[in-house]
Length: 224
Image (cartoon, rainbow, N blue to C red; front, side, top):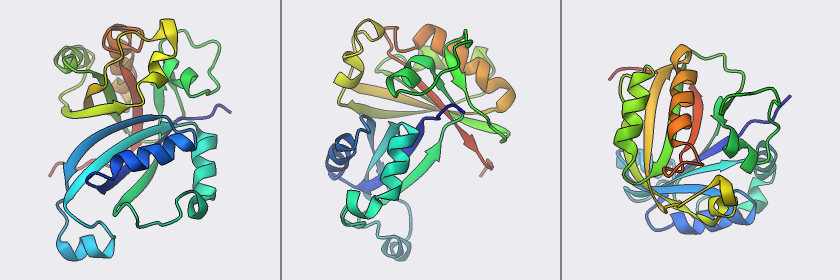
């Protein structure tokens, strides 16, 4: 069985994101995207979950399954105080990722896979596709995604920390930019693969956009 990329979605108090990233890098989780957010929970709910102030740093991290599971098994010692960041960390499993990203994270890739993305078993009906590209490419990426079946998406401004992690790949990465645009696209399973394939073909890691692409299976999506 191939090992899947795993995602850490962390929401911490403002200005504590860099400290968390340093801890994650220390345990070999080295691909981290940082952006900012504003909490909307009522004060009493924030107190219950230890969320502190409303101003937040949001960290999206990618790591190998072995590394993330080892972190989970040793969470009390890896992160000595569960509340020192004033936030939450959510662990998620991906359903697909572009091939070079998987190789960077040392996953087992199907040698017969000819296309640019690797798929994992997904029993859900929708994927949340995450596409991170250099600043200025989101509009072009969205155009390609819509041609492949996407109905829309959301763009978040963020920053890739430790860009050397991609730059050190050499020929597989060019002009890595710290400033990033992160596209979030909710798509049915039947169109997700085509969206990812088409975007990866034009905007993958080896392109000027340095696209990092992965998908998260969604349990349920509601229009609110």
